[in-house]
Image (cartoon, rainbow, N blue to C red):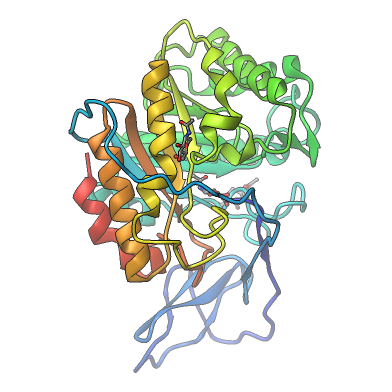
Length: 389
Ligand SMILES: *[C@@H]1O[C@H](CO)[C@@H](O)[C@H](O)[C@H]1NC(C)=O
Ligand SMILES: *[C@@H]1O[C@H](CO)[C@@H](O)[C@H](O)[C@H]1NC(C)=O
Ligand SMILES: *[C@@H]1O[C@H](CO)[C@@H](O)[C@H](O)[C@H]1NC(C)=O
């Protein structure tokens, strides 16, 4: 998801206050409706509001910058000899640590937050087995790409990663940076390689970690995107991290619908361990941007990825749909069902899919997969569960 930023405003004048994660409202609630410092009261449903980390009155502002418009309307005809089977991965993005874009390093609890491990536990109980943990490179390496890590940010990030992998599930490390560092396109592939060597060293012995080279490269030189991905792969393997999958992403926001025309050069990536997975993103709204609750049609899901399916198979590659979502309506629910049917029917090349997105600060965001009351979770959990590994 491109450029979702969180604007926060401080609350004032709390008296008797509820503690972290405690109830702070709901029908019949007699206690305090204020939260202790560092937390704010968030409506979950008519009967329950809860104190969650962060400043009050958080609202999401979604960028209106549009992505390239999808024009394809090819029918979702089945491709050559699909091997119907099971996906290896089904899970969600976990947002929060990358929030507060532009406020660097920013304040924990105000500009950014780490995913809630109790919410992740709920999703694990539901059967999900992969979580893409978004973070910001500017917070992990505040000085330069090659410099040492901010220990507090690394510790908090590692805590979430370990929570996921200790449960036997996969944790995707996602620098949510769009191929940029402090807003500038990363052109120093050697520095990028060093960044990845340093990060992979931290997780070299954890084979349930997956390294995602960067979120949504876009409007960049196509060869540079190839070279950055290769530098990341080389840096990761040089760190002795040899057992992990590596998710590579393409230019043009890694869109699945345009992969076969924009990112064909990515087939040249090499990995001595042969564990590259091509991560693509696909939303089902008019411009594929994931900024509208409406989907184009009930069949748009499969239509938008069928070309990518063919590309993966023709090139002998594996893919994962790293971001997808739909609004809370019947057309989108059918489109998402068609999308997941397509991925599952082609599980010889598609390994899995990750909903966009869970995270503690999404509030009433139309795609929120944060249990128990996120709009996406409420409307799609039972649909997604049919495709669990
Ligand atoms: C995951 O969360 C980030 C954080 O905002 C978002 O930008 C991204 O689109 C979401 N989905 C994936 C698969 O990253
Ligand atoms: C890490 O998390 C703790 C709370 O668990 C918080 O107090 C601290 O500010 C966080 N630091 C960073 C850099 O995220
Ligand atoms: C490229 O992908 C799109 C979207 O899936 C598809 O409609 C189109 O037929 C594909 N083109 C080629 C040349 O494979």
